[in-house]
Amino acid sequence: MNITEVKVRKSFPTGNPKAIVSITIDNCLAVHDIKIVQGNDRIFAAMPSRKDENGVFRDIVHPIDPETRDEFDSIILSAYDRHVALEKIFDDMIADA
Image (tube, rainbow, N blue to C red; front, side, top):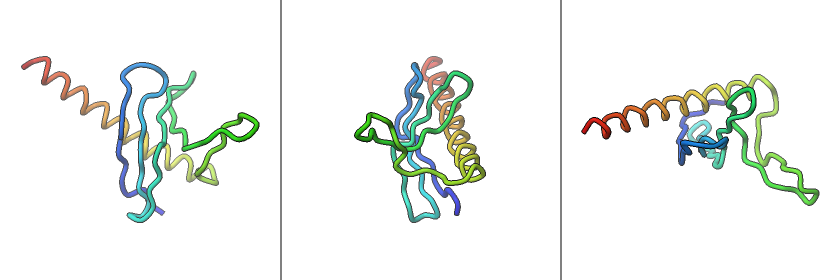
């Protein structure tokens, strides 16, 4: 199983939520509404979730084992880092114009 595409749908310059991301797995399955969140100790990818009847948020879809979770985080966060770098370059170009 491979993540074949990562799209940063929306980014937020301030606050703890940093971005909303969609991924495609093996060019055949899309997962939307993955959130990039700045936590107390690190930035991480939060899988799509919803609140259950007890008010607890539960992931709708998520990796089962830690190795797959680490792989997803690495790929998603690398794409987010590239997106932030490109935004900075673009913002700098506009500021210099």
